Length: 424
Ligand code: GLC
Image (cartoon, rainbow, N blue to C red):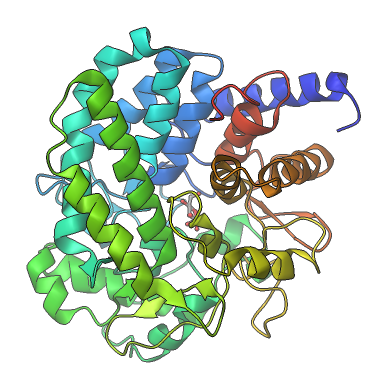
């Protein structure tokens, strides 16, 4: 950051992007590549909007939660307006909720963002938060009912983790024979350089997994029996645990029913132990079918502080993976043979993951939080509001004018807007 003039220009640009990606009550991650409402993108967007338009911030969360299914699940994509430039669309998913949608969820950060927005102005936040609260409880209950293995939160599709093509899933995906899927044409590679996107062999398996859910009408009891892909995952686990804690705080603050939360929190605190891979020195993905570790240090491993969980040796591992890169936190260990600095979740750095990781560092009183914020601010200032970045050079990659990068700039990086406003 050269000076605050630069910061003011970046603030204006971030606000422009958020307004441009506003589709009236909900935001898209970026025009073209992602033309619908994505779950965790929307939660980051809500915090971004709240920085200059508080009611719009609440509205984003209200629209997100209005897509909740009868069983409590909140889908990872809501197809408000069908756009043929995106694949796979609503017909392939066959979602069964009130809005055409996908059939899987995404890391539950919305309650955490709701708390941050509430804290900006508790008197304005009380009414929207009271209305949202039971919906968050029902969503979190759905995770506890359908996504737990030995107390660890699981996902049933790589897209559910939000870390689509991470090397963590390579072994388990390779065991899937993607038979019976109809011929299809990808659309993502028409928007973005294919070398930055998942490969066709991955895509076949993503679609095969979607078909399993589609064909049984997303019956979770049935999926538990037939879906071979069930990964206990630090992203899911740590975001859910953190969100439970924030929901409990909000419930106490507003005098609402928090009865289920202490037990859910205790279950996840105990379950975190089952994600600790001592040989790796990091929290890791565990395949619930085989018990095998992914043996992958991802950026999600460093959400342990954010979740308020004992980090064990994670700080030493963090120092190791940060050392070889200019702009961490790399989404995959830069010393691993699977590291690819431009391919999506196989190496690139993601500003919104950095914000969550740093929230945890700050709350633990560690200087790594401010250091990560400053390097992320520089990364965005020098390279723009890209979807993600090459950690070796900082080069922008994937989509541009990206909603969550703009939101993270305003809410966390900008010295004029969000920085320090909600840090505890
Ligand atoms: C990709 C990302 C996911 C994100 C979505 C929309 O699928 O992996 O995390 O939510 O794009 O930005």
